[in-house]
Amino acid sequence: MKTLTKLIGSSFLAVSLAACAANAETGMSKQQSAAASEDTTMVGGAPMYPSKNIIENAVNSKDHETLVAAVKAAGLVETLQGDGPFMVFAPTDEAFAKLPAGTVDNLLKPENKAQLQKVLTYHVVQANALSDAINKMIADDNGAHPVPTVAGGKLLAENDSKGNITLTDENGRTATVTIADVRQSNGVIHVIDTVLLPK
Image (cartoon, rainbow, N blue to C red; front, side, top):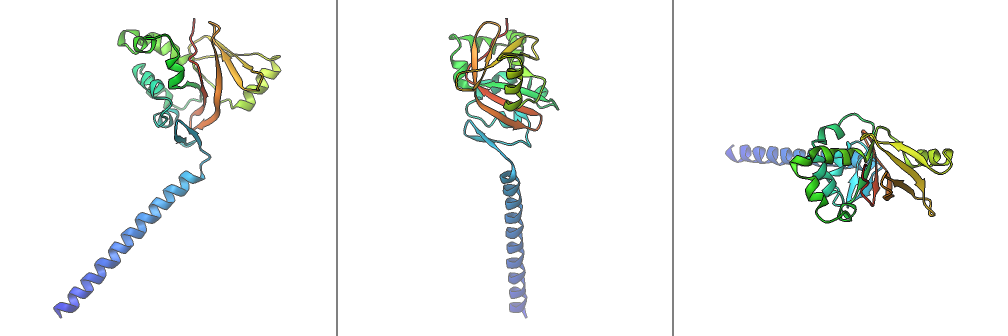
C-alpha cells in the first residue's frame, strides 16, 4: 500500500512538474511571439519596440548612454514617458563626444540643469512625423522646412545630396538623420550624428 501511495505521489509530482514546464514554455512563447510580431528597429544593438515609450526604449541603446544620462540629470524622464506625441532627434554618444572637451560634464552639473533642459528640448518636437512626412514638408517648402522645437527655437530641415534628412540649428551646426522612423508608443525617434545647440 505504501509503495502504491509513493508511486501515485511520484506520478502526480511528475505530472505537476510537466504541467508547470509546459505553462512556462507557453508563457515564454507568447511573450516571444508578441515581441516578434512588433516591427522593431535596431538602435545601439537593441530592438526598439513600438509598444514601449521613448524612455523605455532609449535606455537599452548602447549608442545613447550619454543622452539617457542627460535626460535623467535634466529631470525629463517623466515628460518623455508621457503621452506625447514627441518626435525626438536623438544624438548618439559619438555626437556628444564631438562637442568641445568638458561641455557634457559641465551641462550635467546640477547648477546647469536649466541650460541642459533647453539643449535637450531643442531636440524635441511636439509631433509624430515620420521621414516621408518630413520629406514632403521639405519639398513643399522649396527645400527647407522650419521645425519648431519644444525649447522654443527652430531647426531647419533639408535634404542632402544623398536624400538624407539634415537639421541645421540656429548656430549653423548641421546634423544628419542616420536612423529614421524608430516608432515609439508616444511618438518617434530619429537618430542624429551631431548635437544641435540653441542660441
